Length: 297
Image 1 (spheres, rainbow, N blue to C red):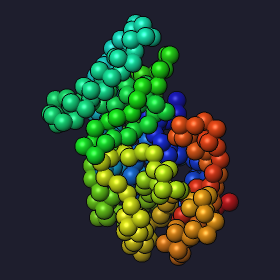
Image 2 (image 1 turned 90 degrees about the horizontal axis):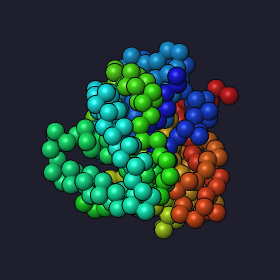
Image 3 (image 1 turned 30 degrees about the horizontal axis):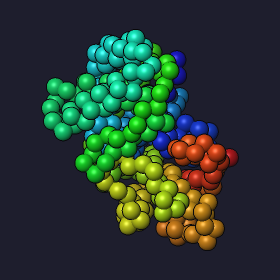
Image 4 (image 1 turned 180 degrees about the vertical axis):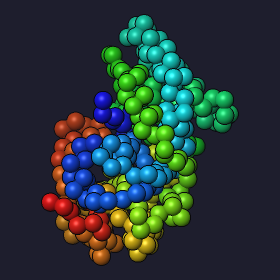
């Protein structure tokens, strides 16, 4: 079976894979994702006919990387726990499921505060549980780093996709994982590396920044710093692809990324915005694919 992301992630790239594949280099032996998120591109790259030999994924969200590590290293235990959580959810009457959800969310946040290693498996299972039962699969935290997304009233969520978890685990066996700032990847990246960079998107308006994946914000200053990092890695000879929002969706004269990445190829592609609480405001918008690789189509 083909592996797919094991969580829903706002800004996930599953819908854009056909566009992004046009920018994959013909040959590469190393792959790096400094902002791994849901991993749609990661799993696509790992299932290519000639996958890379060395892979590094990174994310500032330590709970996300903990989940990846548990899927890689302890899939059987994770699957067993997810089946228990799934059964508990299914036998709970619909009227009591919100209370159950809030109790699980509170437990998850308590484990984050305690930061005890022997709770890592339970945190990983609760990460998936909350992802499948919270509003729109959103991962949002407050300034203390605690998860605060409301319940979604799901009728029959698939909390344990056993076959996919096992296939993802198999693919992740050769993947290095790290928690921290994207700059950690600097030493790994060289001329043989394909680097896919999918940072927190620049908000289209002052009020559209709906999510925070960690307690740290990603400002325009940090976007500029990232642009400098991308240029530095491109100068090493690495093959770079960057995704971000298109400011021209909101202001046709906003050339923030056109100026920041003036020395790169910039392509505008259609994507669907799925996080707006008003379903009528979800729909096609442009996103940017920024690359030093000329599209093969």
